[in-house]
Length: 559
Ligand SMILES: Nc1nc2c(c(=O)[nH]1)N[C@H]1C(S)=C(S)[C@@H](COP(=O)(O)O)O[C@H]1N2
Ligand SMILES: [Mo]
Image 1 (cartoon, rainbow, N blue to C red):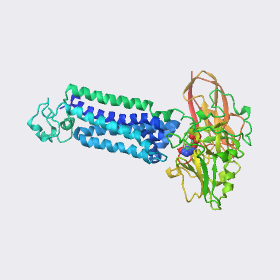
Image 2 (image 1 turned 45 degrees about the vertical axis):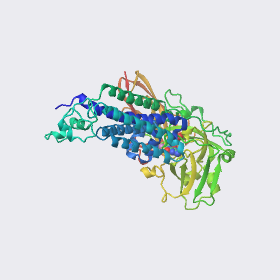
Image 3 (image 1 turned 60 degrees about the vertical axis):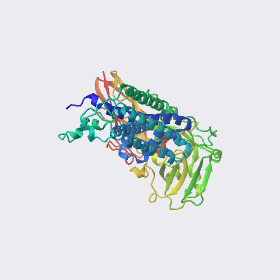
């Protein structure tokens, strides 16, 4: 027998009520969480809770594909997962309504527990989740009830003797239960229906059902569309807790040479605005730290522990520095890098105060949120002047980029050096401790490799015949860029024009012109050479353990 849509209808309705109840739970909670803050939004907190457990094999492609939008992808995945669970619970309700309600209640306690156990959360943070959970339970209960209400035994549906097999508290159906048909052993829709609430509720109860689940789903959807999660994920997180009055640098950076920028339309500007600067971190909402409560503690293998407050830090003679920051997860040709003028105090001066013990070889920096990075002690002591930074391009750090203070260490990928919201520096050893990403398969040290990318032409651009202007950037922090080579199709490598060097720690722009490019499909490839003579390798490799390699190549059409 072919099951008709009508036979599926009751089951679909129950699944729908599970989905609507889940939507209401998260949506209502998200709405209420706007009054309390990101630490109280169950969707955000759940997403946050699974981040440390997300396998590297999943993180890597997500960051490569979505870059700084990885957080939206993560939260959307959690949300979809919750809705699927809600659907399953609704489906369970077909056979066992009570078990479904219990399952929903228990599942709802998971986000509640995640909220309560989150560092820095208080008891009020659980209010949105519990409110959402109660509302969700009511809707699920109503859905299960109304859906079955039309055909309680003795109601409109006819009863048949064969249905005596069903346990008495189950609503009866006018479809012969499958278990009375010996030929059918595998579960079929008819089989399921024999245990479902009812295929024939009265139209009044059906109306009530749709009114209830429809309203719940609508409230949930509105809540999600206007709630805390979306606000935290899409808008630049509201202003910092306080405004710091940044002092002028005691030592200013050399001005950036005018011809560091080649003026090619489409090349990223030499200095990256904070608002355009890529963002990569393991928190869904940046922590809100009151600078008056902030301090940095230096401890571990030191002669004397040192703690410095924000007032003390801002009273020190600060240094300014242009540095290009790079993410190890940047795919070949990706844009997870940016250049800023950082203002901060040299970490080595603070380390000197503490006095590292002779056997220390690593600085394990720790963030307010628990993230850690392992930086070779050397890199924090040498003349690159690793900074405890408070300013970026003349402004205080935004919450996304580490307010009130972060580290910036030229020549190392961000994950081993650029700790945002930094609160601790622990002097330790590489053979004793591992940082966050090292525990997940990445390198412990990770110096930046020489690399380059094409900004223009854009991949798959359609261009007019004639001279094609190509341009982009190249970087090899600490060594500096010596040369950039480009080639059209399978032609020879030819040196590109280079923008002036600001410092060895900043990227350099490059530009190349190809005259008389005829119609057809073409490709441009780029490679950089650093001042040590290392040529950027063509070998394709993934970002684990210490960045992707390979040449950036883009294709375009001339017609
Ligand atoms: N607290 C904290 N700091 C962090 C991270 C993080 O996840 N948490 N990510 C690091 C990584 S992987 C990079 S590439 C840089 C990115 O800094 P940005 O987001 O300011 O560009 O921050 C580093 N600092
Ligand atoms: Mo990174």
